[in-house]
Image (cartoon, rainbow, N blue to C red; front, top):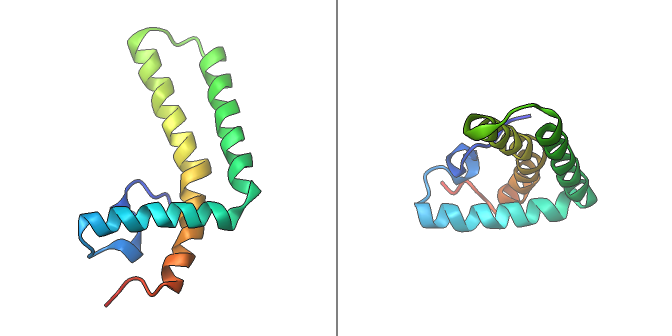
Length: 101
């Protein structure tokens, strides 16, 4: 599975101006959530539960510990929720004729 860190990582959106990329990226996310259905919510709950478990049971304190947990939570969200949603939304973008030549 490819991980989409930013709008520029979505091949169908390359070469478009930033405003159009942002608009299509939002549409891609919305359409991707529709297409994967309940799997989106299941993945979101799993990411939240894992984040809470890590935050509660890892003995990391202070600023550095909080930053490490925050990075882990962001990574979980990107891998478990956002990337599969974008992957499903890419199919919609391709159906709409993107990338435009």
